[in-house]
Length: 147
Image (cartoon, rainbow, N blue to C red; front, side):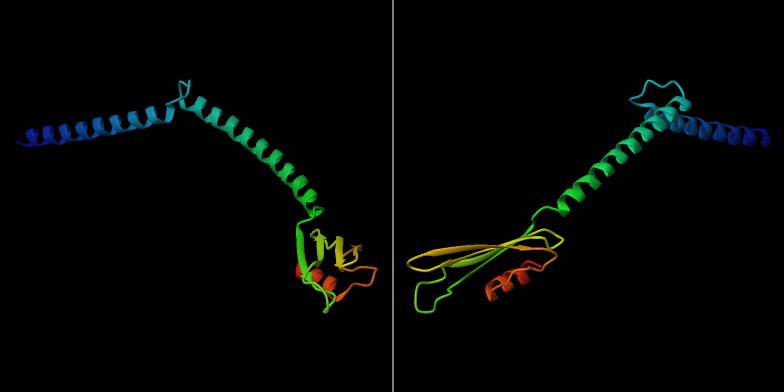
C-alpha cells in the first residue's frame, strides 16, 4: 500500500513538472516571437542595442526641442487689440491699438487714429514691456492686456 501511495505522489509530481515545463516553453516562445534569436542571450543583446538606439534618438529630440524653445522665445505670440473712438463728436470705434509682443516683452504697438478727413498710423517699439515713446491710454491698456 505504501508503494502505491508513493507511486501516486510521484505521478502527481511528474504531472506538475510537465505542466510547469509546458508553461515555461510557452513563455519562451512568446519571448522569442518575432526575433531571429536562438537563445535568451541573443534576445537580450538585441534589446540592449535597441535601447541604445532609443537613448540616442531621445538625445537628438531633446537637442531639437531646446533649439525650438529658444526660437519660440523670440517669436511674437502675445497679440492684443483695442478699438476705441478718440473723438467723442465724430464716428465710432474706427481707431485701434494693437500690440505684438514676444515672451520677453519685446515688440511693437501699432495704433491708428481715424477721423473723417484723415487717418494717422503710429508704431512704437516696446522693449521689456516699456516704450521710450509716450503711450496713449489705449496703448497702455493694450500693453497691459498683452502681458
